[in-house]
Length: 356
Image (cartoon, rainbow, N blue to C red; front, side):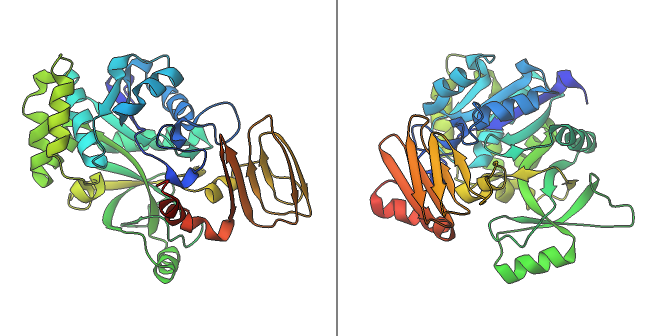
């Protein structure tokens, strides 16, 4: 991997409403220490990429409202490395913007796109997998990472790949199709087939290749961000971006490009991964007591309670009695006590509360 021409783009613009009440529109989950280790998810992601990508080559894609939060948590970066979208239009427009801007700086750039709020435990293996993806991208492939499924999960999209006798974990394979989040029966069939991996939303590609793909499959977005690259780094960039994003459709990079292109490969990743999409997904990565409770924060006393996740401020004392399979979270002036089995209803609850 050539460090000077490798760039990291960390996607840090989401709201993270499923981590309410800690995650709010003003301070979403990528900026929070949800693991209780003194580092935010954004900080952990930056450090993971910084192992093999120079600091000056790491850019953060975020909403303009979070620019100062990013700079506070990543003081190594300059303001010019924080690319701010004026409004949320999903992943295709902001990736097109970042790719066009970096390509104007370095036409030989290879880009690693990573969400800010994923948890990856084995960072050495992550680096090895990214190196395979990087090598594959040099031949003109759009590369995505697939995660070996451990269960028939209905919360992820899936990638079907072409398998042959030489296919092993860590190898790159042609993508046959992308599948949206399935129902349980279809998810089980994917698991049984052995040729479907979870779509991790982590990508590696050369800037010229993703821009060519955008030109071919989403030309309106390509034209918006690539027709006048002299604006990047100038006094006109902020005003330009306001008009540019307003003109863009709300579309993901998967729908815009990946599902249409014929030069897509997937690297079969086998590191420990979670997208931390919900409080429940966090529990498998936290230390547990003898009753399988995950307790973060203050002095927490759990009596006759099992399989609970508790996260409270450090100055609070909490007593639990007779709770099983619950999430208990306090943040500022908000308290949530929610059954683990009802976690998928949280967004609907927040809508009814006027908090969504």
